[in-house]
Image (cartoon, rainbow, N blue to C red; front, side, top):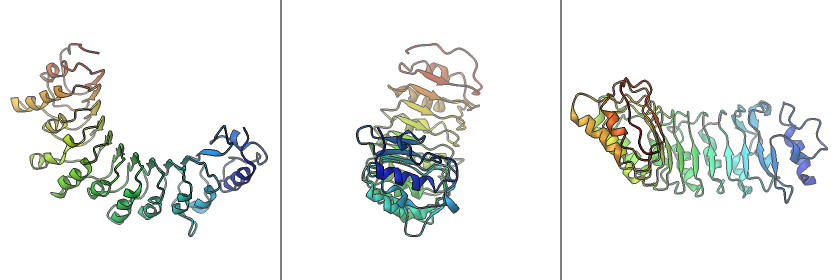
Length: 336
């Protein structure tokens, strides 16, 4: 199947914007056979462009109109290209004409929060990756709120952007959201507003994947802020990663309210079981997980052997990681 003639010309124009050898010397060849290109086998129209790390958008500016001719385009990846802006009047709102565009990856570029307003016009998006850019929610809170216009968005990755707790409220109206990654996003338990912010997000009952690694420092203020984890509202949550946060064993009380959880990572969370029965009682509540298949408790040095009896009661557990936990003894094997 060959790419349509008009799209071959457009592919050549696109390749001219890239300084590597992508498409060079192949101007008259079938573009569907180019690397990084996938076409619809029935129509010959381009449906996927994987332009990761092609390193050569002239002056690090992007002309979004270059993609408009590809009317059947479903997936566009521009990750890791150092793009920081657009040619004047050629920003992402132009891509709203691509009614089939469902997947957009802009990770590892140098965009800032100003592009959020134009991204909010891409109503067909189901997956948006904005990881490792220069977003700061304090400067453009309204931009993140505008993303609520993306009614079909199911996957959002904001890893490694300098955000704050307000991002939770800004994203709370993404009604179709199933997967949210906020790793390294500067979420801190620094004020009473955190509880309200997290509660607004937890109303999104469709959420199935939540990654909050390397954000939260409960420090010495554990008890006043435990309720910010309103996890019991997330009835469909299947995967939760809270690794590399400074938590407390009491967090297990909130986590035990997640009926659908299959994977839980609490690696390096400073979990500690003191020499009292209260902490052990919190740990015992993990046995409420009826569907848990993966549990990572590694790098929590201050647990003790008493947790082994609770862990052995998991009938559905398939993977258990307890490395560097200071444990000694034998865990009986049951279930799967």
